[in-house]
View: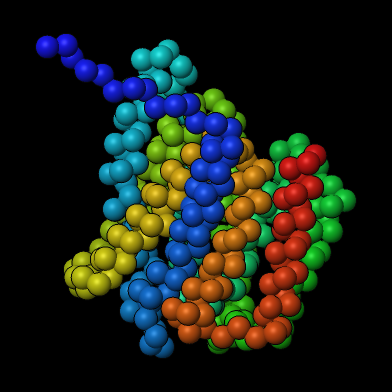
Length: 322
C-alpha cells in the first residue's frame, strides 16, 4: 500500500504574517505589564510586604532558568552546526555581566520599588526608559540627541512630575525612595540595551538572551543564598505555597512567554512596530491595577499618564521614521 502524504501548508501571506506579528507584540506587551500586578499580589495588603523582594526575584529566576538553559543549549548547537559565530569563555562572562545589569540590578530595584509605590506609577516610570537610552547613547555610545527626543523627554517627565505632585497613584511614606529606585531600574535597563546591541548582532538573540538571563539568575540566587546565610536562619527557605505559585506565574507569564512572543513579533513586523504596540503596556497595567488591586486613578493621574504616553510615543514614532 502506498504511503500517503499530507499536503504542505500554504505559505503565509504578508498580511497574515503582519497580523500574527501585531497580535504577538500586543499580547507580549500585556503579559509583561502583568509583572507588577503579580508582584503586588505577592506582597499583600499589609503594612510590610508578605515576602522579600529578593525571595520573589529568586523564585522567578529559579523557574525561568531551566527553560532558558535548555533553549540556550539547543541554540548553541544549532549555531555550531551551521558554522555561525559563538562566544568564547571570556565573552560569555561579559555577556553574563551585561545580563546581571539588565535582569538582576534592574529587576531587583524594580521589585523593591514596588513595595513603596503603586503598580501604575512603577509602569509609567519604567516606560520612559527609551529616553534614557537616547541620553546615555549620546553620552557614551556615539548616538545623538534629537529635537524630538528633547521634546519627548520634557513631556514625559512633566507627566511624571505632575503625578508625583498631584496624582492619587503617587502616595506612600517612602514615595521618593520608590521613585528613585524606579529611575535606577530605567537607567540599568537602558545601559543593558546599549551594551547588548553589538552582542545581539554578533551571536544572535537567542544565545545572547539565554546567557544573559543565566548570569542574572545566578546573581539573584547567590544574593538570596548570601542573605539567607547572613540571617543565620533557614526560615527564609520556608516560602508559602501561594508565593511559590506567584513566583512561577511571574516566570511563565511575565518573563518566558512574552520574551518569545516579542522575538517572534520582531521577526514579522520589525522593531518599530513592536515599540509602537508596546505603548499598550502602561494602559494594561492601569486597567489591571484598578480592577485587581483596587488602586485609585483620578483625573490628575489620567492627565500625567497622557503626557507620559504621548511623550514616549512621539519619541518612538519619530525615531522609527528617522
